[in-house]
Amino acid sequence: MNSKIIGLTIILLLSVLALSANMANPFGPHSITAQLVPSSKAKVLRERIDIHLVRDTVDYDYQSQFNIEYIIHTEENMDFPLVFLALNLDGLENVTVNQKEIKSIPLDQKNPKLPFLRFKDGYYEISYGNAEWEQINLNDAFYFTAKLHKGENSIKIQYRAFMGFDRRDILTKYQIEYLLFPSKYWSSFGPIDLHLHTGNKMKAYAQNLGAPKQQTDTLVHWIIESPGKQSSFKIEVGEKIALPAKALLWIHPEVLALIGSILLLYLHIRYIYKKYKTGAYRYALLLGNLIVPASFYGFCWFWTSLANYLVNGIFAHNARGYILLVLFTLPLIYIIYGLALFVVDRSIRAKFQQRQPE
Image (cartoon, rainbow, N blue to C red):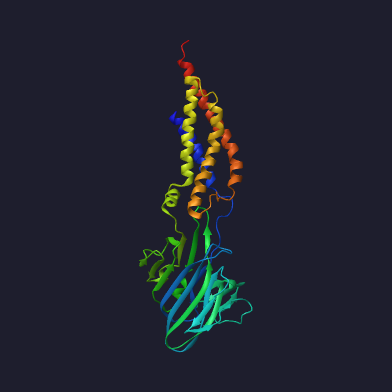
């Protein structure tokens, strides 16, 4: 009997894998932004980045508000053209140079020729100095000219970026990505103070920055000592959840559904056995064939809905395409399960017939 239960458990495991497949795209795009790209050499003494997680109920659940300050040192007064690289960003909210607000302009074909921009072989390229040129999409860049004086200068940039989402799990995760490779095009680039302001409802679940310098319930602080050693940093954030929700997500609703189905499978085979042993439970095979395959999806729906309620406050299954998946796979599972249990039933009956005296 154990081998039969193991074999049927494999069938249920395949159902779990099928159930995990999301039939619609569970991802959303996010903004990718970068450090300022210089057109000539200058020193960045330090950079401070403050990221605030902002609730947005229009297009995305959350957005990230960036407030960035560069402390730049120059040896003389100069007009300093700078390019800000961004993907999937509407624009810069505010740019100030030494407390004076200036305008940033999107790079496009209508712009006048810039000394650090050229058109070659059908593509636009940007110069990072030292005769280095790289391709660029003009829609993903903004430029401005900073009037810098000799000594230390402050450049502040503010913008709001989209945070892409990952809805494959019940707990939605959001991505923040910031490119660091432009730091290598400055004559030197000091440390970066990065402050992630999570607020009371959010937390960082994953990142590639290493151990934070400081961490509280509402703030995570990193210091990036050598920005040029990594191409970007990525942070994955999501809402905080209570202990019961954590436990349920750790176990996984599909695993709980599988456990429930295995218990029903055991009871099904047990009552088939009792049918031949006692003569009762005449319809054990038929009823079990109807209940067990469908109950697996019922367990999945219940545990997933409960987890969704504990995390998001809505008792509902949030997997898109779930009903369609059930309609396509449940008939096949009924056939496989019915055939397998028919073999089990015949096997048990044969054993009891062999025991009967001739």
